[in-house]
Length: 486
Image (cartoon, rainbow, N blue to C red; front, side, top):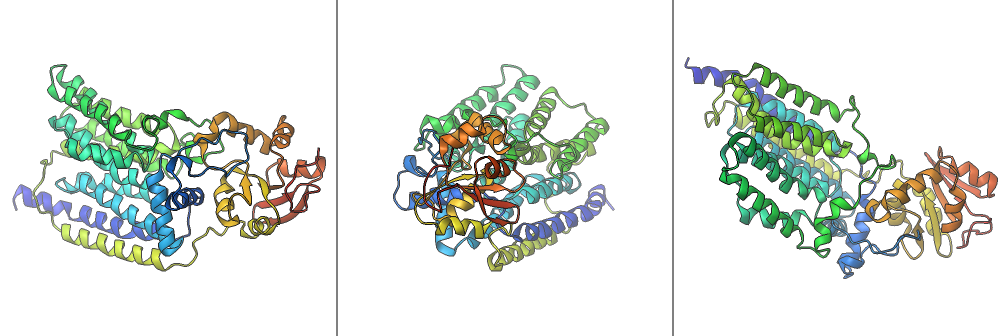
């Protein structure tokens, strides 16, 4: 048996593992109700746009919080898509969207880690990336970023290793769409800059690819301005940095979190490959890997795109450490079997997503929201942060129902959000906030300290409990609009 045949023989179980992963993970994603509680207010923005409201005015009037109502969506393409899907087939179609975009992200990840790559090098990164995607996939605009992040990582590796840039006529239209769909588009220009830095470290200033990659990165910033927000769209990611514990996705990375373990394993694979490789890693290679690791540990929300970008880079590192050719022989044994398993998983998952009936999460307090909806007059609801979307969607929205705060963190800013956190914890200053916004109802978590305080000190009336939520009514309001008693 030749060396090539021997190597292909050893690759058989790795490709089968990739096929099994590609078959099973979509099934897990397809099951279960809507998991992103912010989806509902995104749907409302999209519904406004489909009704003819200009993008700059969509989403106005939801909140009675004394914050200027000048917010402009930077994800309006995603929100319009969500609203159109819901109009076609109801909320069920958003579960199909979740599943379809996961399958698309899985396909791109497979392309950059397994296609024209040694299977025994790429399968580990493909598996870890698939598991991370499975854990973090939701009905969100960030799904487009998950689809494109592995491609950006592959572009970074190719530019660093060969000096080849992605085609400008592909990149610029892609950024124009991506930047109006999700803020993750910044990964592309930052990736180009990172690859230029790696080229600089390995080849010096005279390398032509450095200049061209920096020029393309600058051009992507201009492409991101093709938006109703203009320059504001390109700068949106710099406007808000959440330091509050109220927003889960901005939490600090937890070492033993289920999402963190695959990332740590990917880092370990790279370290072992460097230690056992025949050649020392270059300074550019080290810079790329360390930058992506640092990005991943900046916040919980960054872990998934960081791993997806790292996967093609790490695959190349492992392949070189193993001494496998790059690219390997065109046909690997059982490659078609792996593809077939992936297709079976995709079809089965999309079918499951389309036929399941339980769409709204079971812990959503639909009964309490119905009480607010059926109350006469316009209602001002002091709400816990994460329930705003379902409350607006299910209660009918403004003008009948307005919320104190909703999921648009970039509208309210960290200072205002932190003020709500302190109020919900009944910390000093809660009285000022309640008097300022004068709500008629309060829909809070039952374990939030503000609820009992409102009952005891302000004589609010508890009108219902459901799951982990409690609904309070301001004294004297009787379901009518009015201020809380002093």
